Length: 316
Ligand code: PBG
Ligand code: ZN
Image 1: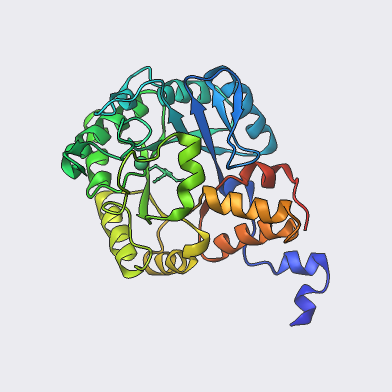
Image 2 (image 1 turned 135 degrees about the vertical axis):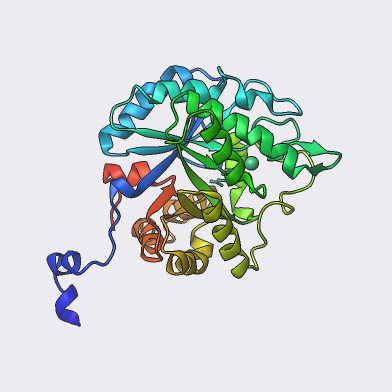
């Protein structure tokens, strides 16, 4: 066995998986209230971007070889129905129009309501609980609005039951049959989203997301979630988070042989970066971590390390 790994050439030749720029998706935060950029304290190296500098930031990503970005909007106003999410001139709609001018880039809007509702929940409330079916109508409206602003792919992340079917139906009805759906299918109620909630200003004002996001104890339930999304018309499914859930990812890929993404979430980024920054592990831990997600079966990996990896700024 040693023959296949003694030299760099041999190791590369026999490599079973590889981190390629084409398979990376970089999350991007766009803040409607902002001019320029503002650092996110809990995620060193990651910024919120104003619409004024979005084009230049995305062009820079494109130049280092990033083709896909996942767009998150921070709107200038929130209300109980999250109406700024389907405002034709909303922050993501404006961002999509800007992104469409960037060469070799596809911007995928994340579709959820937690950045837009004053409750910070991912859907519309009836009393103190998120009303699944009421929320589906809004998701459909948001999807159509994103498609009308140029989105070629939409990524619903709210974990409402039936969201993929509702979005597919709304898109088809308005003539957007070609717009595809990257479904957050097995999204866990994870502690690892905390830095993101600071980044996107989407912390729930009360309660938690356990009624719609999955229990970390469950594996077979994830397969049922994924199966439903495939039936409802998802074009790619997703497991999220990634590193603590590689077993789920591997099982999902093996079971369905369906296009599958994994989202290496905000705290995966912050924890690793912190460990590297403090000299606890070498920088190679980052490539090792991302490699493990591809090895487990991901076709695409959403990671805040995408820009760094593509720039070739990481050592062993
Ligand atoms: C919105 C959404 C979240 C993330 C992606 N989309 C937060 C949440 O569900 O609370 C988390 C991403 C990350 O932590 O990087 N529903
Ligand atoms: Zn949400």
